[in-house]
Every structure is written in C-alpha cells, then in structure tokens.
Image (cartoon, rainbow, N blue to C red; front, side):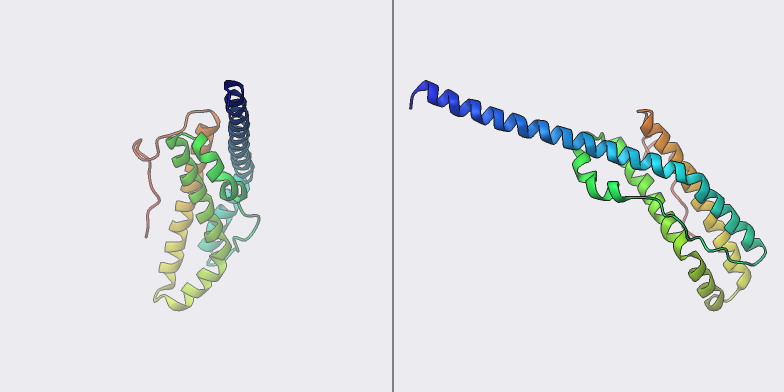
Length: 175
C-alpha cells in the first residue's frame, strides 16, 4: 500500500470520527437545553403547587383534607436525556439537578398520595392531633424544599450553581 492509500484511510477515519464527535457534541448540547427548558416549565408551575400546599395546610387546621392531586412536575427530559447531558455538565451542576429533581419528585409523590395517606393514618395512628401536626410539618418541609429548588434553579439558569454539599445546604428533615 502506498502513502496515498494510507492518507486516504486516515482522512476517512478522521472525517468519520470528526462527524461522530460533532453529532455527540450537538446531542449533548440539545440534552442540556431540554433539561433546562423542563426546569423553566417546572418553575412556572411552582407558584401554583406552592399555593396548593398552603391551602392543604389551611384545610388541615380545620381538620379537613384537601387532595393534593393536580398537574405533576415534569421529569421526562431529566429521565430520558440526563445521561447524554452528563458529560457536558460540571459536577456542581449535576449535583444541583439531582437535588432539584429529587425535591420535585418527592413533592409529586407526597401531594399525589396526600389524601389517601392522611385518611389511612387517621385510622391507624393512636392520636388524631399527632397526624395533623406531622402532616402540617411535612407540608412546611415540602414548601421549604420547593423554595430551595427555586433558588438552585435560578443559580443554574444564571450560570452560578450552588455547591449543595458544602455551602450550608439544608437537607429536608425526616420526622
């Protein structure tokens, strides 16, 4: 094989590999955009979900149960393209996304099952007042977590993510 043949093989390899790298870069960039767009959507929904949590707590003060069902926070992009976005994100950004989506997911689960869980616990727990107190505290903690998710999201969107594990980050309390 002569030099021109080797150069042809090398050029073909470089073109193929170069186009693969460009496609991967574009795919990662689109994945990050999809996640950030989804976060923006969730942040637009957040005031409504916070209002429902406040109403749930108010109803509880009157020993009534307001179901927390409604439109759930979205996690489709995060679930489907995070692995593609992963190499393009800094560790602190990945940490922020993990915490934000954990908070949103936990809030979805709590609110969706709220009515059923309160009714069950009112039957099973020894003291009715304790049930109302505990659920009221949990609502406070979910509201705090959504405020923290808002703060973390704003930081991500502004290119100033928070180091969630060393900058005084407050985890939700378990009761």
